[in-house]
Length: 430
Image 1 (cartoon, one colour):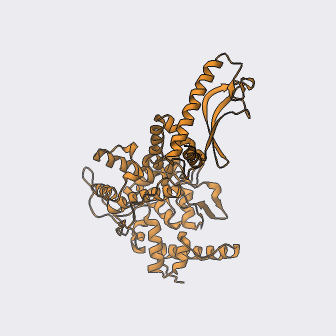
Image 2: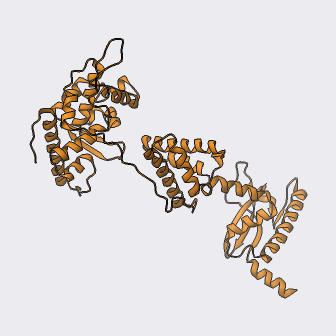
Image 3: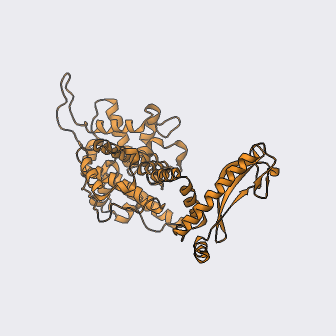
């Protein structure tokens, strides 16, 4: 019997004791009584829910307390339960290869089975795909990026509702390769392939982040190909832009739409949000300096005369232009602008639908950027590295002031050549 007990004691390797933590008093001026679990010199402890004054704990017993007998009886029973549980768990090898914190958790769950369900609930919450996705979105600084990820999460909710899945309870383990296939098929019922693929890339990014954070080891995108379809080319030639810029617009708003698109083209395809939110102080030495919202990169564009004329026409009080001073939501403004541009060339007939053919029926605000690049490369043979630098795609090392200045001059020269060709049909190849 002694040999068996010593064997169990050897396997146990943990000790427990009651400990009054007197390092820092509670708000009431009392101190908390803890159960301490120690293994290999490392300790972990959990509160016993008893609070005592300094003079109310002596030699492992409660003294000088109005409920002294009741508390000592309770602690005696708890101590017996702990010793029996420790012995049983040690005999079963439950503490093998576990640290003190893990041993304490195992012991407390054995004494109170309800803790097991609480732990499982916490584990489910920790592995909740929905909760993690929401926190992932909140960590993003760019509002546009937040919006894209939020639209993907809404699409996941729609899919879960359709399939009868509890959206709030879905875990990373629930999202299998088959789930991804079904989700993509659902997206394709109402969206184009590239939009569905963006949703998949967003979900994949969330998985990669969760893996890095140690939340999950699952990865449903292994050997799963996310398709990408070639998008419709929405760039226009110099001839097409000349026709647009020189068209005699029949009312003020249509002329404004053409002017603003022309300004975006003059600024090498500046993004709509960057143009709308540009402020007057950012104009320095006849250059527009701004940080692109999408990438966080600093841009500097020389303001040619054609751009300055349009800026003077629509100059704002607090912003470079008065666009969002008139229409606070820049997306609303540029959606309207694109719709108007797609109608340029149509002939208005009173009381009837417009007739004729639109000059640029597929145009959008992004066409300013793609058209500038296409014209620079295909019509003017401007070197691709210069075009890349102009669009902010350059990987060339421009860390020194001298190199930055040299490349800025190359970009300025390229922009001038593009504007001369489009506005005046003056070709001056590099």
